[in-house]
Length: 420
Image (tube, rainbow, N blue to C red; front, side, top):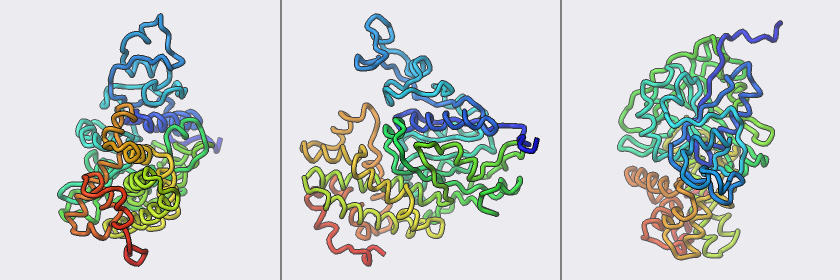
């Protein structure tokens, strides 16, 4: 009898986004809620941007005699009927408790845990559509790899989501190539979640930081912006401590390390894409592993400097050097990630990276190019472009102001002392 749950309600989980990585995370989460029925409701609503898609001849579901294969069908109907995202994650069987939903407001209705996983260009519009439609005590996890730049500064998506929806939002990021995770090849990730103090008091969750706070306003913002007005998670629900958050994502093939450093985890996932572009540029030139290693070393130093300089005590330098979201993600992204691959192809073929993106990514977008532009705009406002030579070099190469061959000259002389 002592093992019976004292909580009368269970957490309802939804995933906002259904691209390659969004569908993969939905698969992971759907498997885990099925294994923890005492904590989570069993169905996972997954928001899908509705579009029409014809099953290609290469798919195992292709049937020349079926209308599914001869004319376009709604993507949500294909996912729900075939239990596979045939467009963005083909040939991967999805758990049957994933329900594709074309209505984002319906997707989040009643959800206590919202997982955001979509291209960062669209998060502002999606959140606008969700204002007033989420539970006031809902909590979020951002899997979005990018940063939001405005006249108020450089903001993490976990922050912008939290402030716009008045919820606390953590972050997930790591050395996670989506297809490898979907194929259940072993990997690690980092989840940052610091339970708001009001949640910790109802009662203090076991395994969570005592008396933690949720500061949803970056220290780098020069204009003060309002914090989210958080509502406490009702005591009827199981606590969202590190143990329960970890149980939502940890799989035998997808190991999770928990931290409270939301800023570090978010920045690692965003900034590594800029570094991956640089690695792709030098690899496309045929310069080999030594050049890639140099790019990665400088990139890690610039990540640490960016985090500490603009996010103050809310960011730990060790996150970039010790966690999957830091050095491990740099290594993976500079070896086989889409930003690396597209940058390498662009150099080898002498084509614009946008042209490669359109050809290779099946309608999805590179995060590195947009992040490079946004970070550079922020550095320009701060007057510190020269302090981040690799980030600045990538921007100038994308703009056509420099060539990939210029990278050694552009970063020359910037040792650790120069970047401190």
